[in-house]
Structures are given as structure tokens and as C-alpha cells.
Amino acid sequence: MNFTRAHRYLLSLCSGILLSISFPFTGSITPLVFIGFVPLLFLSEDLETKSKGGWHLFLQTYIAFLIFNLGTTWWVANSSFMGALLAFVFNTFFMSLTFVLFHFVKKGLKANWAIWTLIPLWISFEYFHLNWDLSWPWLTLGNFFSIRTSWIQWYEYTGVFGGSIWILAVNILLFLWIRSVWIQKNKKWNNWLISSLFMLVLPIIFSWKQLPILPFKGARLYTVAVVQPNVDPYNEKFALGTSNEQQLQRFFKLANSVVDSTTDLVVGPETAISQGFIESRLLGLPFFSQIQAEMKKWGKAELLIGASTVELFDTKHSRASVYIPGQRIYYESYNSSLHIPQQGTPRFIHKSKLVPGVEMIPFSNLFPFLETLAIENGGTSGTLGIEKSPQVFRAKEKLAPIVCYESIYGDFVSEQVKQGARFLTVITNDGWWGESPGYKQHFSFASLRAIENRRWVIRSANTGKSGVFDEFGRIQKETKYWEDAAFTHSIPLLERMTFYSKHGDYIGIISAIFFLIILCTAIVKIILSKKK
Image 1 (cartoon, helix red, strand yellow):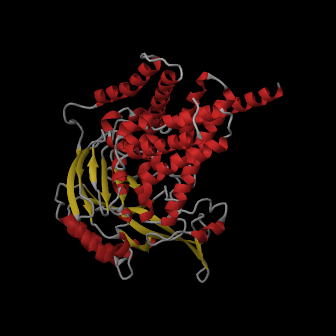
Image 2 (cartoon, helix red, strand yellow; image 1 turned 135 degrees about the horizontal axis):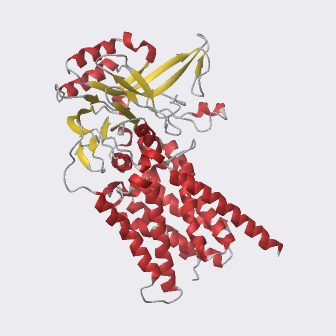
Image 3 (spheres, rainbow, N blue to C red; image 1 turned 180 degrees about the horizontal axis):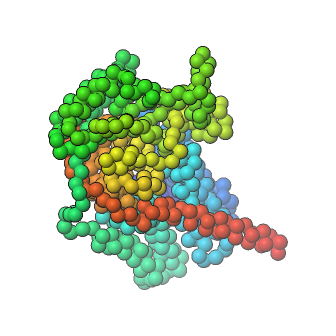
């Protein structure tokens, strides 16, 4: 193996393209992800044999991961160019840094098995990336299979990290096979090829056996109406002069076209009530009287809808609190879910997983001046307030409100299932991205939450796509994008807790422990080798 610099950049380019075109809706050629890391593994090995430093690897892998990020999530720039630029630069940086760290560890351990350390290192990166202020888990490797749900029914045991392990393991085995043929000139079938085929095929066979042959029977049915009002987020939803009464009139016109006496719940999208209001004053606001009057026509149906809300505090409540000097009080803005029963008190739950740069200024709890750099979007600026932990509405049936970005966080949703949610509701506004892969990818990710928790998912999106997923992640109902729509669907209320629902992202935690052990071992070996 003796690559020139041009060869190494070509390998980097190949990896970036393979990963991009295998991701959902930017090619959707999913099988190619199983060779997407192979060129980078050859790149790493070539630099190791030439004793070149990690800087060379960082530059060359940066190209691969930048292509991957741009090729799959370029549409983020439709809503915020600066936010997209920061996401591309930093996410690529973290991916490259992780691969360089793997190269460092492998070189330090000097063992045949060291190549397998890529798995715990990469999973640790993905887990860490889920749990800090710059969180951007859209490109978690396990998400590649959101459009191949028949392959991943075992996510109920592993979550998406199981998919990440699968991808990396097959890539490593295929690399070892290609290397044995190329370097060792072994032209026959060998153990690496057989192992890679087994690793590729067995999870799919196991998954197929999990899928039911007959339709679901046995659970009590619950009828949900989903409304897609299709309000342009740029020119209508948050425009000056727009009132909540006007937008709700549009909403109820669609809802009333499908709701009947059998409907249990009506679901509206994120910020369907777009003009901010103080939560504690809701009952006295004119649009609430409008809601009550419309709901009386429904019979028993309750309402779950998104709203932009505000609350007031005498003292600073969190980093999201903003001081009003003239009134000597603080206010916080929220992206909220609002549940309104036929009888009883309405309740709010605030979105907890915020979009960095748009709804939350990263690290502003440590550096408060960063709040002045807030990117305005959706009628608010700066950091929004959040719930301290995942919450459910304790109504006739426990409702799990999942707002937009939260639907990418498997562990977050599993916490809601632990609290008794028997189905999942995703409310979102994907109109910011226009006709792009973004809304299609986001729609497909709901299937992963369905499989992980074996719960039906109801999805209401402002401009689409709205839909219904069964507990196997299969689409049962789907609307078109950028059209007014409303429909009803009856779903079974399920109670079984999956292994993943009980234990969440345990694979991420285990991988992080392994990562620390491996890193310490590599450092010790390097230090000892220098003393000889």
C-alpha cells in the first residue's frame, strides 16, 4: 500500500460521496453506507505506515465529512445561512477529530484488534453529540435506516446506536477483506468476507422475523384527528398584523371537516398559535373563547396544539430569563405544547431539546454575552426556556408531546414512554426548509421512535408531511407537502415496554466507558514505548 497525496484525497472524496448518496433522500442508496468508511480506513492505514501525523489525516478526512454534511443537510441554509455554516464547519470538525483520535489510539495500541476501537470511539462521539449545547444528531449513523424499517426491527433493543455499530462493523470487516486480497494477494473467499456477509445479512433476517404477518389486534382503539393548516412560516405565520384568531379560524375549518363524535384527540402543529401570549392569562384571552366554542362542537375530543408562549417571574428563573427594567420583572419565551381538555384546566409543556443558534445560544449559561448574538427565527430571539426533564400530559390518555427537533432524540422519547405514554405525538413546522430533503428526512425519523418504543406515532406538521406510523415504523397515513390537509385515524393504545424504552441510550454510556479505558491504555503504551 503506497498512496500518493492525490490518491488519499481521492479516497476522502469517495467516502464523502458514498455517505451522502446513501443517506435518506439525498440518494437513498442505503447499502452504500456499508462501504462508506472503507476509503477512510485505507487512508488512515497508509498514513500510519508512512508515520505521518494526525494533521494530514485531519485535513483529508475533513474533506470527506464536509461533503457528507453538505450533501445531506445543505437545506438548513434555507432557514438560516449563518446557522447552517456553523453547523457544517463544527459538525465536520467533530467528525474529523473523532477519526483522528481513532487513528491516534490505533497507532498507540499497535495491536491487530485496534481497528475495532473505531466503534466505541465513534459511538461515544455520537452519544456526546446528543448531550451538549452544540447537539446536532441528524447525521447519527443509525438514522440512515429510517427508510429501511424492515431492516431494523431490532432497534427496540438497541436504539439507533445499534445501527451505528452495524454500519461500522461491516465497514471494518470489508476493509479487512479488501486488504487481505489487495496486500496479501489472497484471491479466495476468506474469513473476513464470510464474516462481513454474516454481519450484513443476519440483522436483516432477524428483523424480518420480527415483522407481523397479520394486522394488529387486541388493543383498545383511539381516534386522532390530525390537522395540517399549511401556513407559510415566512410570510404568514409570524407576520405583523397576523392574529391568533385568524390562524385558529383556518385551523378549525380544517379540523371540523373531519372531527366527529368518535374522535378522541385533535392534534395541531408546532406554533399553530403563533403570536406569543402569557400562559397564566390564557383563560381570559379572546382566542381561548374561540377555542372553547369550537371544541364544544366536537363532543368528547381534546386538543393538543403548539403555541408560542411567555411567562413572567419576579426573579431570574433560568438562563432564558430576560429582565424588563421598567417593570422590574423577568420574562421567558417558550416553544410550547398546549393540551386543552373538554373539562378541566389547560396545561403547557415546554420544548426541551432546542435548536442551537435558533432557539438556544450554545454555552450562554457560561458566557451570557453570547445571547446578543442570537439568530432570529420564528418570532423569537435568544435562548428559550425549557422543561427540566421530559414530560407527558396526564389526560384521559397520557400524551407524549414531541416538538420538532425533539423527535431526533431517542432517549428523550423513551423517557416519555416510561411515564406511561401509550402513543407518541410529533408536532412540527418543517416549512422553513422548502422543497428539500429536510422535511422528508425529518418525517422518516419518526419511524425510528416508533420501532424503539413499539408505539404508534401521530405527526402533525404545519406544511407537511403529516402522517401516522405503526409500532413497526411503517407509514399508515401520509399527507403531501405544502397543502392544506386534515384526516382521522384510529390507533391502538399499546403498553408493552421495550428493552430500549426501559434502558434508553445504554449503548452510548457503555461505549463512553470503553472509550476512556482504550484512550488511557493507548496513552500509557505510548509513554512506555518512549521510555525504552
